[in-house]
Length: 146
Image (cartoon, rainbow, N blue to C red; front, side):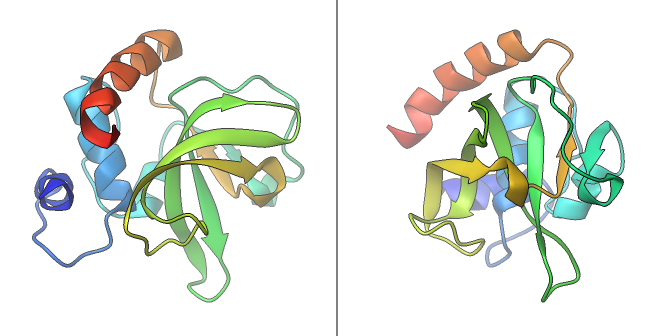
């Protein structure tokens, strides 16, 4: 039922990959900017703060609410998106839709994950006030995944 809501928020029906639709739904529900798209690549056309092809990830503090993506060689493009909710020196702490315990891009739910910063291919920031976003988002998630 939730997956269908995520997809519907981007104009799609049942049966499509939904990691980006999940992000779109969350951004819409929390009144934050971002594409209303279920395509991961659409999230990295604007507000991009890092692309792997630019070189090593610079040392900076991420903004809670920033989105990141993983590149899939087999697809030849960005293929999975996640929401950053925190970080440490080597990792981003994330919330992701359409994943599983193993970190697949074709999963069975919404999970909190830890992603190595070295694995991140792109970052975009659609949050002008990350703290406001994450507080709103956390309150919302309590009703969704707990």
